[in-house]
Image (tube, rainbow over the protein chains, first blue to last red):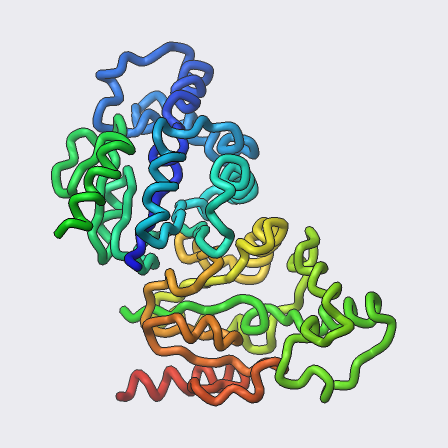
Amino acid sequence: MKRIAVDMDEVMADVAPKLLEAFVEIVGRRPAPEEFRGQKLYHLPEAKLVRKVLFERGFFADLPVMEGAREGIAELQRHYEVFIVTAATEFRNSLEDKFDWLDRHFPNIPWKNRVFCGDKSIVQADYMIDDHPHNLEVFQGKGILFTAYHNVDEHRFERVDDWEQVLEFFRKERQK
Amino acid sequence: MKRIAVDMDEVMADVAPKLLEAFVEIVGRRPAPEEFRGQKLYHLPEAKLVRKVLFERGFFADLPVMEGAREGIAELQRHYEVFIVTAATEFRNSLEDKFDWLDRHFPNIPWKNRVFCGDKSIVQADYMIDDHPHNLEVFQGKGILFTAYHNVDEHRFERVDDWEQVLEFFRKERQK
């Protein structure tokens, strides 16, 4: 059975709206979408402080599930070994939040298939679905870029825009 | 630069004495060493309850550092990429304890090189140092068994008894 490593943030969990609210609160204005198209919100010059919210306990606890992720993961699990691989170790306080979030929304992902790491070059899998080009760059299997506002100018990887396209990609893979 | 995945429990952190004390407290007697030679303490028929201590917050927080581990890791880091890979996701409450333990005793292991996982078949590395045969079984690189009371009857892997032997093994590897 082939193995897929699935990222959490911006693939299973919708981080962008909560980060946008943190921007509004910390910077004091609402940015226009075109301002942060192709880059992380907290990479705007005035918004360096916004990133600190990622270090706060609770930030990752109540993120909404991305549309289609629940059904998508369930469908993938019928054909593949699915591992959830999240770059969590930069954020010590995210560890329990992310663990509990998986328990709550994806109880069918067993603890054996959960990976909290930093550098994803450590991952041994056939496929990786991730919104970060830097994670796919160091991955030795087939990388699949999940569209997010910050990666729209990236063209080196197979791209999927949503979970429907994820499933379509893998349906085609299985027919090869 | 080649990569080594180093296990925490029984390789960097000395778990056995604390587990033995839990056995004494829960079972009500002190087992003789020959009783648990070649098996985990909590696999003794009367000791199933002992394993529950692994799920308690704080259990992994104050374990002593294994003799030679600090100097050993530092020496390995001069020649290899060292990743700490610990099977932590079975024990939700161990995540922060293990993270903080690394910060306290191994602050030179950056967050990027920390992996909290369940099934170690996910690990992409050249070498793995581990006390559990089941982790080495599923690893695709070269597995090195670190001697612990429970693995003394295992003969399928290269064995090291302590950190001095770890360093000796890698010195020879580099001369190949």
